[in-house]
Length: 285
Image (cartoon, rainbow, N blue to C red):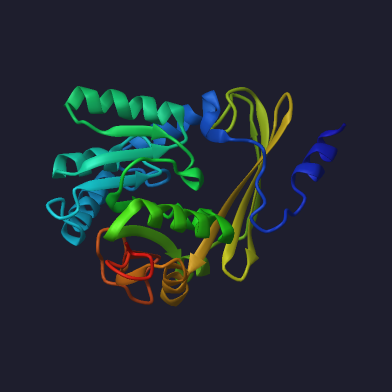
């Protein structure tokens, strides 16, 4: 098969929210680069900046104080940057993530700091945890990377694990962010390796608006073999986000402009929400 054939096959337009078989969080090389990006205090390509996370943890603590919401579930916890802040704030923290490298780092650094954080390697679409939590967080717009059906599943799993009156805090990209999205195709030669492969490889990245409120970053990597990755994002209005949460049985308590509590207006590139499981009735139990 020629290089052209490889690229033609890999870059065919997928179905909406279609995944590939490549799980980059398990890849030895890619997961190393992802962890380095998470730990860069000023870089916002994997996690928010450390300064933002400090403000964000303070806002979440004010919205759901550990005195009244002691058990916290951190979904997509990565290397534990938020989880450690929550633990220092007084929460009993359980962190869930799929990346073994990130979880190894998180467990090591928590131990070095004497923080009793319970880290679990799980897919939050298949959340399997004992007990009830008082607050669940899903930060850095992970919610919008899921398909419509996956978002329903996550909300149901989280609702099942929250106590009556418990809080869910998450953020998403707004439609204003989509307005700034640049459609482009970039071809790159990496003779000395790069983020997606340690050895020489050829890379094509195509960014496109895929539907009214969805974008796709489609990445093809040609090395000894050929691999493709699909990175999806869904962009929300406040009404769209509120509707999904309410259909899942949550009551929206607060909508703000980001996960540090900034005011929400038409220029906000993100939307953050505090939603609550009903204290009684409607299966609030």
